[in-house]
Image (cartoon, rainbow, N blue to C red; front, side):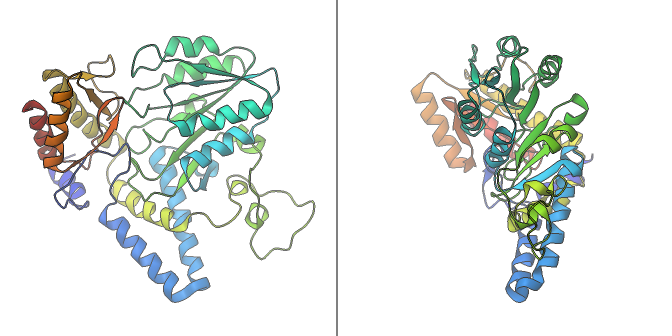
Length: 379
């Protein structure tokens, strides 16, 4: 993809003097997403109920766009308010036996731990919380060894939020499937920036959200379910739209709608979905493999700048596998000076694992990355 194409992408995001390197936290919206939201609000302001045909149409277009970007089949994709709510739908919607166990990792963001903690407690299952033995590294051997014939589900993040470690999805799936266990993945830190065909690998559920690498508004979560899990999973909340339309009369023994609508009891988060659809229309012009390559190249430059200037970078791989780079200095003075330098540049980032988590996207520019690398080198 030539430079002009990337220029078109970077110009679709307002800068206002800000260098956005917190895409692993909350991304800025592209201008086209803002325009889509303005149109939707105008429709609602004028039309009220009559605006629903337009807004529901946009929501369904968003569902299709998410599926296309994340390499899902749309029939398995439900929409909800947040990624954590999508995780909870899966964790609490499955059936367990008291002699089973649930395997999770201690590297997880709390929203991918608490639902599984509580699911184990309610079902009387054993919770196997696998410790990470190397900072920032997924504990592959320990996690795999915890999966056995009594495992109900292995739950983990595809990309870890603090330092960007990539979990060995294929190895975990193969081990879990050999015992008939489910595999449920929090994919929010990779969806939209890294390509992966989860369905082909045998994953049962992938959960995500709109506000990170998808560059949509906060307030939309989603979940993709495998064909077998779609029918086995019990909805946690029910409403008129779980069974039909809002105009249908209630019938005592009426069956739930087919997946994914059985998991959507009422109107989905319309404005968040419409904003995300606007963003995904922009990203559709840029193949996910090209987006990944560009974001990883920026991350690699930041990683090398950290290492060349005495910072520790989590992860043992020389080449970045995810666009999340976390650099840590054991010098308090150096840490304070870099924090001041990044503030002077107006860099938006996040503090994780005691250091600086920098998360560039393909919408970042080479000039921005160069400026941050120079700031790291000059402290």
